[in-house]
Image (cartoon, rainbow, N blue to C red; front, side, top):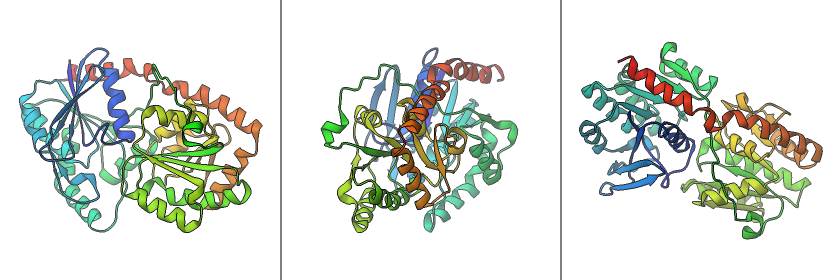
Length: 378
């Protein structure tokens, strides 16, 4: 079977939950099938082919309109690629990208089955909100009617697409996100390389919905009680990093904060390994792969009680959940875990057990059987 995943962005030029799950699903399917990943490049005249294991990834030229939202990166060659390419199933990612729209058109023309994974959409304001509404009015119904199934990672996401986009319940399949650390080798000592001792860690795309401003405010309160603690923030390359630095400087905490972008996977996992705990300050989070990564390394999690995080972080079992945007509660939860060694040990044990369910190896059969069932229904 030949399966093509189509995603707006992909490694190494973009890092996030969507990119991670495209690769994880692709690796599962590649155990039995021929898998290709199709994505847009960041420049119009740029074409590349890279290999991730057995998977070929094609980066097609795209026209980028200079707005913040990635919805306005238009890759016209996606349509031509799919019309010429031989494939059995197309698996697209998210509604609000032109890669999805063009893939849907190609599949309708070729009468090929198409499925969609929903990774969430953070509601923007201003002109971006207007353009998103125009896109939805013109294309969303066409896409929803065309896809066989919509895969969601959580009950939160399921309810969101029913309420917001009117996706029929019978088309929705809930499959939690999953991860793998096969052949993981950590040779880097994060503490020594970056000269930090005790630190709390936050990992995520540098964007507003990740809630770093609330983390910075709470960290100022943490420093009043624990002057020995540093804050490490790791994310992808975004203009938002300058906003974070400026805000931290205004709070007088920048000297106690290490902000990194575009670091290797090994460095990220080394940061997880040596952290005291992991904070997820997101104000919108359909699932939260960072939570799974923290669990794998046995790290306590402190997070806002939002979205899909409520479904995988159990309060005082594998972390502490606090009210959304409540800076004081977030700081108190961080201090509580830092000050209680027994709690950290208990949570660490629980997390290492809990995360085993989300191991990619547990989903290989499901993923491949899922694709096979789709072909049988043609």
